[in-house]
Structures are given as C-alpha cells and as structure tokens.
Image (cartoon, rainbow, N blue to C red; front, side):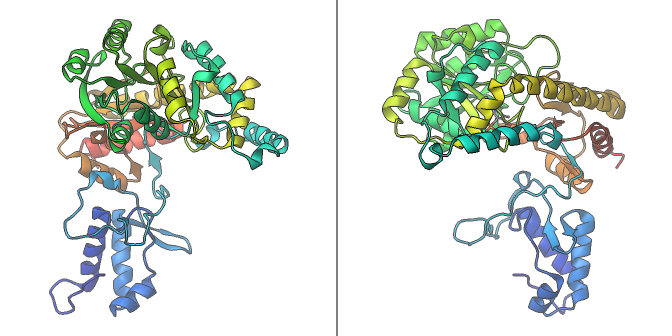
Amino acid sequence: MFVLDHHGPEALYAQLSRQLRERVLSGVLPSGAKLPSVRELAGELSVSRNTVESAYLELDAEGYIHARARSGYFVSDLEHETVPRMAGHASESEPGTGQEPGPRTESNRRFDFHPAGLDQDSFPAPLWRKYYLECLRESARDLVRYGHGQGEPELRQALALYLERSRGVACSAGQILVCAGLQHALGLVAALVRDTHPRVGVENPGYFLARSVLRTNCLEAVPIPVGPGGMDLDALKASSCRAAYVTPSHQFPLGQVMPVGARLRLIDWARAGGNVIIEDDYDSELRYQGKPIPSLQGLAPDADIVYLGTFSKVLSPALRISYMVLPHPLLARFRELLRHQQPAASLLEQRTLARFMAHGHFDRHIRRVRTRFREKHNALLHAVASHFGERAEIIGQGAGLHVVLRVPGLEIGEAELIRRASRAGIRLFPFSETLDGGGDWDGRLLLGFGAMSLPEIDEATHLLSGICLGRA
Ligand SMILES: Cc1ncc(COP(=O)(O)O)c(C=O)c1O
C-alpha cells in the first residue's frame, strides 16, 4: 500500500519511486516480483498514468526494476541478503501473507559471477536425452513403485568405481547413498550424529549452506578459523567439538588445499576421540594446476569420515544429484534409524546418469568441462591482471569454479559495491555470506567464472574494476 501526499512539496512520482525503492531494498518486493501495470496502479492510487510511468522509468534506470517486452515491470535481483531489512515492513514472503517470492530471475544481469554457475552449453543434452529416453522405455515396471532407499544400485556401482579411480575413495556401493544435494545429505548426517556428536566445527570462512543446514537440524555449528592449511586444528580441539565439516581439497571459499600433514593430524583427532569428519569434496574434479588431490577418506577408510560429493559442479546443479559415502558405524546407524527413507533423487535421472557413466561419457565429460573451465579460469586471472593491475590480489586460484579477489583500500562497503555492480548488470555474490558471526569481508569478492563466456569474463571484470577503483 503506497501513501502519497498530494499536498506535500515532493512530486507524486518521486514519492512513489521512493516508496517502491524502499520496498525493493527491504525485500518486501522480492526479486522477480511483478509490479502492477501502470494502468492498475494509477487507478488504485488515483494518480495519472504519467506519475506511475515516471516512477517506473526512474527505478528502471537505477536498476531496481526492469521491463520485459509485453509483460510489464519486474523487480531486479539485488542480492537482498546483503541489504538489511528496514523496520516496519512485513515481508510479503513471510508466512501467512499468501505470496511466495518469485523465482530468482537473472534476466537483467548480463554478467553473473555466482560461484556455482555453469554455462548452458556445458551440459551434455543430446546424450542425456538419449539415455533418459532409453531408461524411460526400459523402466516401465519400476516407475510404478519406489526405488531403492539408498539410490539405484547401478548408479551406486558406477559411483564406487569412479570414486575409487578418480578420488582414491575406498568404499563399496553398499556404503553409498545417492542424495539430492548437500542440504539433503547433511540433513541425514545430522540425524545420524545428533545424539552422539552434537557440536560440529565448521570452517570460517566457509560454506554458508552447510552451516545453516547443521543448525536447522539442531546441531551446534561452531565456527573454526581457517588458516593456510585449512581448518585450524588447535582451535577445533579447543572447541570440544565432536565432529568437523571440512572442504580439504579446495577450501570454500579461500581455495587452499589441506596439506597431507594437516590431513593426518585431523584423522588422528577423529580416531583418538571417536570424532567424525565430514569431508565435502564438492569440486575436486576441477583442478587446473598440479595433480588432483586424493580424498581425505582414502587416507583412512576405516576412520569415521563421511565423504560428500556432488554432480552440481561438473554436470548440473539443477539435477539435484549428489552422493555420500558412510563409514560402517554410521551406515549401521542409517540402517537402524533411517531404513524407511525413500530415495530422494528421481529414478529416471539416476538411471540415466548411471548409464552415462557406464558408457564412459562421464569421464570424457569431465575432461571436456575441465578444459573449458580452465580457459575461463585463466581468462579471469588475465582480466584481473589487466584491469586491476597491482590494485588487487587473487586468492585461491587453480581449481573449481571461483576465485577470491581482494581489493585493498576500497572506499565503499560490500552492500554498496554489490548494488553498484547490480546497476551495471553484474551479479555478485557477497563474500560476507561465507563468514560466520559478522567477520570482516576485508575487500574480498567471490568471483565465479563458470557461467560466463570468455568475452563476458573480460568485460565484466573491466566493469567491476571501474566500480572498485572508482572509475565508474
Ligand atoms: C562447498 C560446497 N559444497 C557443496 C556444494 C554443492 O551442493 P549441491 O550438491 O547441493 O549442489 C557447493 C555448491 O556450490 C559448495 O559450494
């Protein structure tokens, strides 16, 4: 509801655009939300269409909203997470208000630095279609019943072979659970360890979703600082945590590899205290310099290490297929506690994937995307060097789908930087989301390069350097 003062000094269109801007910034109007048509809103507020049109045009020019041909105006994605909610506005996405936030639309963003984005052409659509249709034809009987609770046996077989060969993970197909992403997998782990290991050390900075999933599943997620060798083991020991969530092969977000000495000490900690390590090996297929880093689990298959992996980084985050390898004691607990679990991933997608792997396509696909993402990674490093010069440093290069860029001496805060970038058509993901308990973002930006083409990477970095270095 907009309240316009027809007798005040401020023009009606300016009042309206101010109030709309506030609602967008506070998240009351979520990204993707459709605005009322000019005619509707003018009628509702008893003002001329010109007034509404002028307000919309102003907000469009500032990047808060955007027009879509023949569809009207929509709220742009401003990464609300970074913008504090303003008091006095109930969010329309809160329960009971009857509206859901619209889907995240990136249509107004030409450049997407999201750390988990892939480009559309990297997905092997023709082969996927072929195997999917084959599986559909052959699975008629199975489509009318539930699949295996741990995931389709042929996919788990293919995974066991792949993990042994490429990640040094020692496991049988029986230890594998096919999951629907990290959120699902960690939720299951939480159920398995809640009674025995209720305090979990999590890397700080670290993966925000892991932290929040543990907390929403009633575990205590204790932030443990990350040093040059990954999670600080002394701090972990001092925290009296009984479990640790780590990303040892490519620390998220800083990118370092946990050296073997630190891995062995972490394993000792787990063995000596009956503690559990949750190893998130989310993107280790994508290493561009040096040799691939074998998993922590492979160093000590008998220790209580839960190994998590995903198809999101190399195949598609939309498939929602990931996997988890459980150590034997937790597998026994799973069978005792969660034996009635239904499979979380679609039977057809699982079978399609199993077939894709069994025919050798997954290995070929990985080689192909590794080359593709290596080029993008190198293009980003090159673009940073040429557009930022000495004014910025890259942290954590050489792997995955993102790097961290640190720009010392920035004159604006993170939220303002993200807003300005957004106005320039650039989607940035806030580094501060990786920090637990409000640490300093320290001029660091998470730059994902997977979603953009090589020319886009260069252009986006150029624009970003203008914003950061005060040229824009
Ligand atoms: C650290 C980390 N772990 C895991 C994942 C993958 O999660 P999912 O399998 O739910 O897509 C991501 C995705 O960005 C990630 O950054």
